[in-house]
View 1 (cartoon, rainbow, N blue to C red):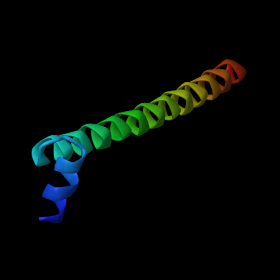
View 2: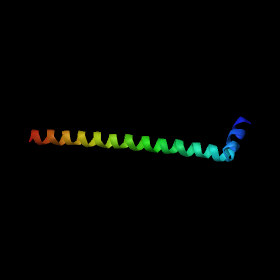
View 3: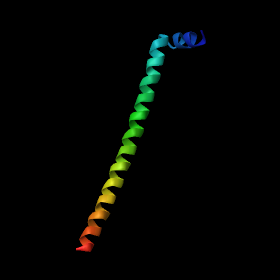
View 4: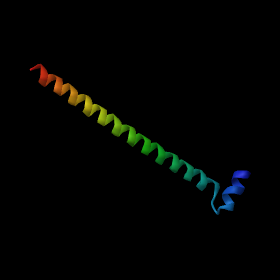
Length: 59
């Protein structure tokens, strides 16, 4: 009942408040995933560059 009272005091329905929370969580997950993916790509490029340099040195 407390959630219902809180949501309606803001002028929203309870399901709107819960949906808003889900959207915020999904946005945070998307941002964190994007940042981690960028770091993985950078690490892969770095390792690939080092491997290429090692192959060039071996020739």
